[in-house]
Each structure stands twice: as C-alpha cells, then as structure tokens.
Length: 215
Picture (cartoon, helix red, strand yellow):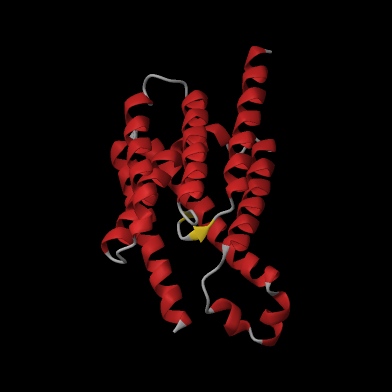
C-alpha cells in the first residue's frame, strides 16, 4: 500500500534526523543554553521544510489533488517537491536574514553535523534494513566528510570549512552519478545539475561574505 510506504519513509527520516540532532547536541562546543536555542531554531526550519515539501506535492499535482487528494498525499514526494521546498526555504531564510533575525552562515554551519550524521544514519538503514548496495558510495562519503568536519572544525574558519565541505560533497556526488545509475539525498533522486548549483551558490555567498568583511 502507498500509505504504508509513506509511513515507512517518514519513520526512516524521523529516526535519521533524530540521531543527527542528538549527535549535534552531544558534540557541539557551544554552551548548553545556546546549544538548545540553536537546536530549536534548526528544528523549526526543518519542520518548515517538511511543510514546504507537502505544499510542493500539492502544487505540482494540483489538478490530481483537486480530483483525488488521497492519490497525491498517499504517495511519497519526489525530487520536484524537494526542489520546491528548498526554494521556499531559501526565500524564508533570505527574508529572515534581511531582518537580522538569523545568521545564515552560523545556521548552515550548525546544520552540517546534523545533516551529515542524519544522512549517514539514513544510508546505514538503507544498507542494513533494505540491503541497498547502492547506498555504500554515499555511506563512505558521509563517513569521510563527518570525520573531516570533526578534525577541522576547530582549525578553519566556519565559512571556509563550510565551503570546502560543500564542494567536496558536490564533486563526489557528481562522481557517483557517473558510476551509479542515480544518486539520492534522503531517498530523493537528485539531478547532477543540483550539486553544481549548490556549490556555486555557496561560492557566491562565500565571496560576498569575504567582501563584506574586508569593507
């Protein structure tokens, strides 16, 4: 049943993200009070992202949703809904940053260990539970990125480490698309152009940040 598939997918995502947030909370160098505040902020944006994905499912299948809403809601969302949600989240973050309500660099930096551990856990579940041999590439990549982050987080600037992590991730994910039939992020089949776009966006943000600091 599609509904059972959706529930299974949601359960895996919830478990993975929960492990990611627990790992962040236990490993962060921030004071406990600040750690809690940052965690609440990250969870808030994550909830918004999930809501945006469901909105994307409805908007991108509006005609079918009007005639048969269960047919849309009962099936897992696809990559288009994922892109749609990222776009809405980017607009929200830009708006919050303009109002000085959020520091995007710090938020993204704090998200790195959460997403790395959550993705690692997701791939681990794919390998152990679903016997998905295609998950090994991402599993090894995430393990290397996680160890790299832990080793370098006290030695490099936040912006520099963030940019390096993003580009290494993007380049390796692109390489995986040439070796494997497809590559995924939390189960969403992602187009190779997405990784190039993410790398370029982070590079532009890095350059603007450096120019702003130098001024």
